[in-house]
Length: 444
Image (cartoon, rainbow, N blue to C red; front, side):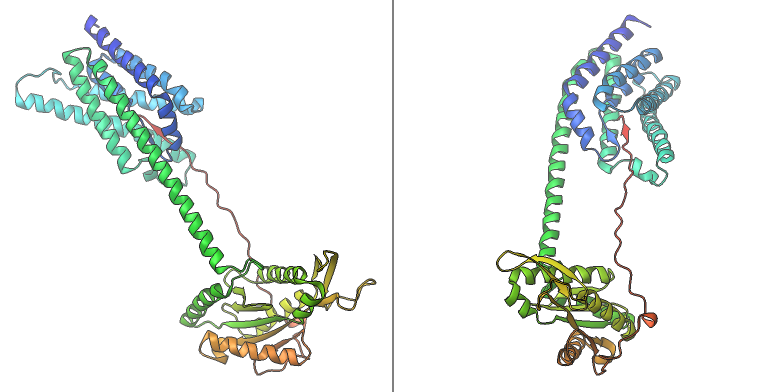
């Protein structure tokens, strides 16, 4: 190795040290914001070293760069060693292509020879990129087999940056062959590019946060616009939209739709006797019962005051009556602890519960009457089915309340026995998705 080689080595080493020292904070931030393969600018130095330096000095330059990167990347030791080995291997592969090709790094004046050197540098850059991508992708595929290999390649913007960086490295390598001060001239532009990348990453992260917040706000507003805050069920607007969708879909699929019209018995008496806080507590408890008893595909909402509407997807009359009976029984057996109009604690109970020792005449005050209608049998639209269910509900009220009536059928005294009842649909069970993604780091 000549004195010129050592000068070139020293210039690249100093340039790397200045570069990574100046951009440490910005690079840490950019790495933290990166959700996929992280592309940095260090290959401008390592690829230039592979072109202009002897093999041994190119190895030292690459290792020194990795030593400076470790406090910024803060990777686990095994990941740092693997990434360093991948980068070192790709650098030496590029070195071998350039120095074993036999092309002169100095201009010869022969067009074919000089263009051949350009082709060699392009092949070396491509192999440098491919070696890093392939080794890291295969390793991460082994660790996270569910992830597709294409996800480790990075975005189009990332790879454009990598190609640009390798091109700058090739030009720097050629410049160093003419004068060893080349790296010192390029260090300032590289630092400025790093700063621009950091600013772009910060703006992108800020924009993504704004979009996420806007989406959450939009979802919240849409939910609020369709939800009755007292019961947690749909409100009138939500019922009109979601029940209509369910009915249209079921009509298209040829599936029956059962409608339940539910009205709390003597609810005005609860408000007059115990106060509106007690009435609100009863409404909230009925909302909880409906959410528990229905399937995710069913629609339930508060249709004003103490009236509720339930639309059961893919449900015939027999199963609809069974569900209605289960709902009626659950409401008639509920216990609600609340306060009266004087802020005294009171416990209201369902009418199906046995009288307690301290129960007053109005404490057992909760029950519901339910009307049942099937859309296919009681009208060709949801509105007609709801009208039929309301008519059945009025019959239940006239016949003594706390019962289920089917449109056009009197079943008040002959409810389905439990042994022959169809099974109630299972309540909703939500599972939170898991995400075991791995972060990828790559030099560019």
